[in-house]
Length: 117
Image: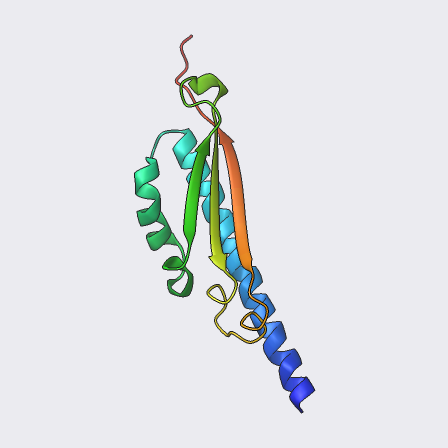
């Protein structure tokens, strides 16, 4: 019985973490794209995370934004990285409490510049 419960809870936890990773990856891609086309600023990312990620994950995600060359928009690439502890990304904490690790999602987008003919 303990082995069966371990398998069931472990499978549910793994699926929950995989789902959270997928949501974080999608959000990182959306944020990188929105930063690249100048529809949001880096200061608005925290609000977007709070709005778009599910309740069990949104308060535990940290983020970083990096630029390759902010002075030259035509050469600039924007990288957004979201990270969270695996036990915060799961609805049920079973194995991730014993083996703590961090999940990360990274997306990069090239800075868009207006067409100048």
